[in-house]
Image (cartoon, rainbow, N blue to C red; front, side, top):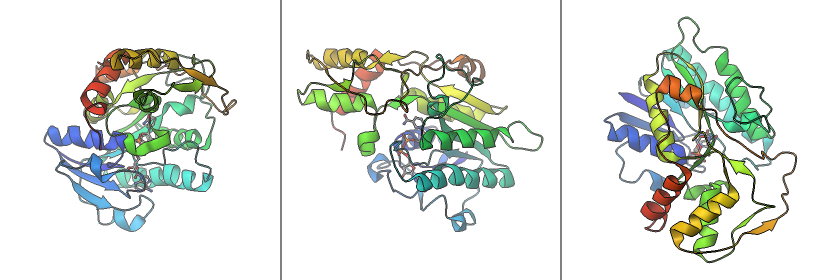
Length: 306
Ligand SMILES: NC(=O)c1ccc[n+]([C@@H]2O[C@H](COP(=O)([O-])OP(=O)(O)OC[C@H]3O[C@@H](n4cnc5c(N)ncnc54)[C@H](O)[C@@H]3O)[C@@H](O)[C@H]2O)c1
């Protein structure tokens, strides 16, 4: 199978590329390397198309593929340049969607749990959406646009994946936007008190990248389109993460709490309802928070990630 992965040099994209190549696919990575890191692709047999998803001239030169996995986006949710955020995340998505509709190519694209805002948990795909920042709003617009085409006559497969909080290898380049698990690990490895917002009971559905890459690639096999949550199905608190990292590192560091500067635009709890994920993909995430953090630290972070 020939697959084009946009944002393939990024965190989720490069893990998806690696899995696709491992399964024997011919993979083309389309990335402008504005954030993605070449190191994520080192040693992986794929072809690189270097450029911007807003550059329409590139669409004319794309190789023929059976599917596009669209991961490219501005992923720093605190970015103040709203115009750029909307252009890349929404107009870029529209470009990819138009291409797939025209060429009758399957499209799997990255949405986000951000679309739920502070909605009730566990979050269900059909509940009211209330994005709290421009990033989340851009993803909300992608979903609204996709829903106009999903499962319509003559339209190729379109699947939106609402990723929750993904963590794992190949996220280092994301710096401040990398997962909370990675940020806390860095502090604790250096014997610093892990710093979290008061009082560490904010909850996130942390989902390990190995489960995310697997679910994303499996989505190519679906024969009906839709929008699916990709989470572990369980919310863990920041205090809980600190205690797991302490255990894996054999330390006993106490958290330092500070005021949350993002009150009003901050999601206090996210937890995915994964009923549809189970039903449609027949898949239940394999990594609990403990198992995922242990695998991440012992197999990747404490070894070497450069
Ligand atoms: N990581 C998470 O927890 C998470 C959660 C929800 C949704 N998502 C979504 O998943 C997707 C992948 O996220 P990620 O965590 O791997 O982020 P990432 O920043 O590591 O990857 C994004 C990639 O897109 C590329 N890119 C950015 N603008 C581009 C452009 N104009 N043209 C071409 N390439 C461009 C970057 O260089 C980067 O390689 C994104 O769409 C993101 O919004 C991620």
